[in-house]
Amino acid sequence: MENKYTQPEYGENKFNCPNCGAFSHQQWSEILHYPFYDGGSIDIKSYLREVPQMYELEEEEAISSSINNFLTNNYVAISVCYQCRNASIWIDGKMVYPLLSSAPLPNQDMPKDVKELYEEARRVSALSPRASTAMLRLALEKLLPQIGAEKGNIDNMIGQLVRKGLPKEVEKALDNLRVIGNEAVHPGTIDIKDNANFASALFRLLNFVVDRMITQLKEIDEIYELLPEGKRKGIEQRNTGFTSKQG
Ligand SMILES: [Zn+2]
Image (cartoon, rainbow, N blue to C red; front, side):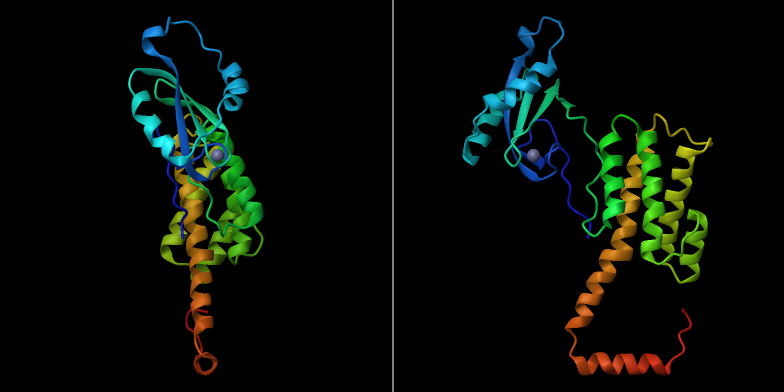
């Protein structure tokens, strides 16, 4: 099933950490209030170096009590993750470090080589939706042979899977992935460059395909294994007496 992902939100005390990805508590601290802000630039890099070490994290109870006071009138704030103890920096209610991908985490059953590309696409998605879309296209190319296609180009591989009886909704998801992914690498008609929506859709589509074609099948196999051996034999015997229409 799809991993639950809670996007970081200003002032929230629990979300998926933008540094380590874990769903964890965050300790919030204010750095600069609006009244003291003189319009000058803020040296984020020095905060990044110094602030995480300055904080000795307190117990869980302390987090919630610290949250209410800091939300109003706060120009620069920091949240520190309880799991990895790394900091996120927020200016005017928006996270500026680390550059956040709003993309969901990869499905746990995503094959390793596909997941590597997915994670890389996730890391660059805030900077370049087009780069991340192109990486997801490559991820799709690697995924298809692992869900039953022979090697070939993406379009052919999808065709092969369709002939093997691919569920309609998966076919649609794959074609969406293919068409949008192609636009990122070939001159096309969709403006991928500045449009994060396409990249964001591809992350969800890829997870959907892995969920339908790997996770759900695995779950059904696991349930099947729970049946008594006699029942399973009976099913297998029935099937060998049939010629399957679907192939
Ligand atoms: Zn973390």
